[in-house]
Image (cartoon, rainbow, N blue to C red; front, side, top):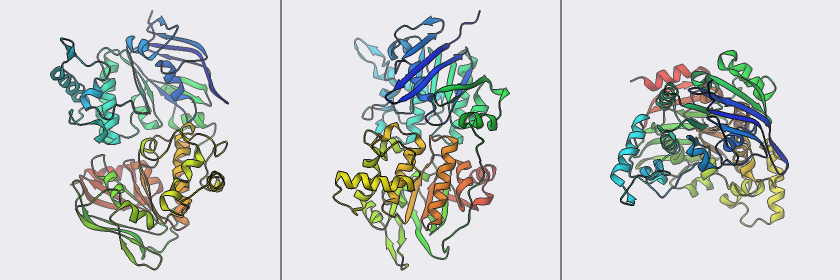
Length: 497
């Protein structure tokens, strides 16, 4: 009789005012990849935190490789061979890559850390994933994608029986998916199980053997992946058919009058990059991670110094203003929404109202905001940004990824930003929320906002853009109309010489 790697039986969990999970059961078989799909707030993250001992269930049973766990804790579960990669970064930012990769098992010799052996082990784990990182560099210097890959390297262990991956590909380009999937296949071939949580259904169908679909804290369907289609999973996830039609691209602005102009800027990564964005236009810049897309976003917003070239913002009288700092950009109405909203964009422990007025405080439009004015302002902005929350007093960290991104959008709507620059605008956001964000971007453009999107998601830029610019290794290698920007065509442009 085959012993299942993981069995969850009738797991229930509630938080104040919320029933997060209700009688959820799940079986992960040896040597299989089991995917869990569901929209933000479906209970996926809560379920895997319970399965890995990070949280306790109100009721239900947990079995790991046939052993019933009476009082599961993270250490107990780890000792039974379960490794986890959570959406929230599990890092020590001031320590090196080596120390973070081996955080829970640094090798010792004569009672002291054996640094030579530690570096060898760290390099071996990263070599298995074909990750090129300086193992001595402090983790705080890594990009979002590099942090994700480092956490995957830490989780990959020969002793692991089950590896839980919560949105492991959220910050990875398609070039970086190949080594990840190759390692997952090696683990599966070696009898290791993988619990794979993802919003990207194409990845689920590529890697998973079985799937569990969740909605509102309950399991709505389970089975072999071959018995489902992407459309059927999406309908199960949301309880309705999800439209994936492209956003209307009727440009409202005057394209002859650019609002943002980037002229031959150079940096350590970028080489003579030039582009322009007009009022009412959505321009996307895409490419693999390492192409310089995120660097361009920060530089355009005045948040990163350039070596040469110019960045101009044009006011309503068409007068050009050179931008050399974030403060100058703010004064000219340039909003910047970073890729890592949880670390760099939001105060997760503060309420919605405190977060949504940060734009007004940064721009100096309301240097002194009384608690009453904060609440009044938030109540006025939240409906305009289509934020779904019980009240403006809800803690932002409890909102779904889609609503967190809308809070950041609303923040800049509150100061009537003329230019919005997005770095990976829908990273870690479920399918339905993505299309809500796309519609919101189109609505902002129709109101006259110039929008620059920097994204490594080829499907995304094809959905929402008027124009798409493709980069590789810090250089622009092509441009195409948004209506013609299919995933295949963009990949072809990126790979072309």
